[in-house]
Every structure is written in structure tokens, then in C-alpha cells.
Amino acid sequence: MIPTAAAAPPAAAPPVTAPPHAAPPAAPARQLLAPAGVRATARISAVADGRGGTALPLLSGEGPLALRRTRGSGAEAGVMLVGAMSAPLGGDHLTVEAAAGPGARLALASAAATLALPGRGGEPARYDVRLTLAGDAAVRWLPEPLVSVRGSDLRVRTRVELALTARLLLREEQVLGRTGEEPGLLRSRLTVTRGGKALLDQEVACGPGAPGGWDGPAGLAGHRALGQLLVVDPAFAESAPAPAVLGEFAAVTPLAGPAVLVTALAPDALRLREVLDAACRTYGW
Image (cartoon, rainbow, N blue to C red; front, side, top):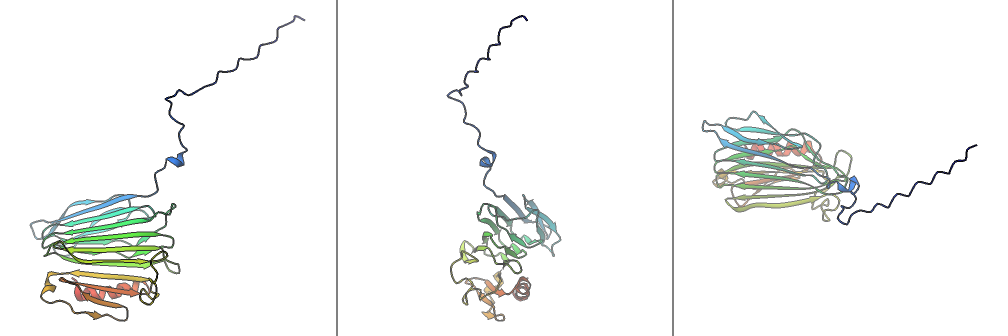
């Protein structure tokens, strides 16, 4: 046999070192994700069209806030808020902004109830509504109920600014939990100014984490639906509605201005709507 030399072992590769200016290793994908939550704004602008009607030069929705034109009544323009996805979830921040110019007539409604749902990170959700009414404008804001689902945390903030000759019809309905379940935490504040002066500023908190007594005899007293109807009308300056009791759990309160506030409690959304509809026929339009 012809002798052969043994193969030399391969040389070890030199160690690889990063230059001093090299970027640090990329973080895992889950660390790069932004905090959960959707940011979306719906914008509506209504103006008198000069022919006895109302035009909508701006109708813009985002994400879960889709807007649809609807048939109005008389000079009124109608807009329907349609949920394009489940929202608000924890971490979401949704905003509805509507402005009615001088003499404009606008009716705003929603196609279905709004469900406040828990998010994965435990963050609260926010829902803001901003209404601005110029002189002689009239706006009806009549959304479907807001349902506070177990485990959710929602903060609702509604701001309304009215000129002295503007009219407003605003309804809020809040339901604590779906059928047979406990509610989430709901904090809601309504602020209304007229001619730059405060007309109404009230806040309510219900559900786990709310101040004690919210469900006691001086609070909701076991009811799971609460709502209010606010009517602002310059005509009330000459003939103001009188305080009244509407059944066992509803009351009419005249405000320090040409306005009246109807507040009501009920065991469910259906009975709450019946009370507020009756009040609307009496004081609204």
C-alpha cells in the first residue's frame, strides 16, 4: 500500500466580533408591538343649503366608526353611525365630532347598541362625543344604548357647545351588563355650555371600582339601565317646564336656562326607552 499523510484538521474560524457602532440585536416581535387599541374619529359638518334644507359637506369615518346618510325630516339631514367592527375594546379611543352651522338641522343616530368590551391588556377604553351648535341650529343626538360588558372599563365624555339660539335634543342610555351578567366599570361625564356659560355638568360611575353606594338605595337601587334626555330650547325661556315625577324612578328637572333634564332608571333597556320616548314626546321635537 502506498502510505498517505493524514489530513490536517480544519483551521478554527476566527471569532466574530461586532464593531463598536453596531446596532443591538432586534427585540422579539412581541416587544415591538404598540399598546393595543384603535384610534378612530368620525367627523360630521352640517350647513344650511340656502334652499330650506341642510347639506353635509363633511362626512368622514374611520375604523369602527362608519357614517351613512339617511333620510331626514323636513329641513333636517340625517346621519347614521354604523359599527364597522367590535368597539370599543380596552385601549381603544373613539371620537365623534359633529358641528351644525347657522340654521342647520341635523339628526344623529346609531344603527345598533354599542358594547364596551374588555381588552387583553386591561387598559380602559375611551369614547368622546363633541357637538357644536351655531346660532339657530338644531341637533338631535339619539344613539342606541351603550352596554357595559363584564370586565370592561369605559370612560365616556360628551361635550356640547350651544349658541344662545340653538336647540338640542340629546339622549343617553346605559345598560350595566348583558342579560344575566355583571357589569363592567363605566364612567360617564356630560358637559353642556350655552353661550359660553355652563348649563349642565354631571358625572356618573357604575360597576366594579366605582365609588361605594352606586348600587345602593340612593343610587341605582338594583336597576341595570339608566338614562337621561336633555332638551335645550329657547322657547322654554317663556314657558319653562315644571318639575315633575314620571313614575317611580324618573324625574323631570328644569335647568338654570331654557332646558329640561329627564333622568330615569329601569330594570332593562326596553323599559328605559319607553320612559324616555314618552318624555321626548312631551318636551322634545
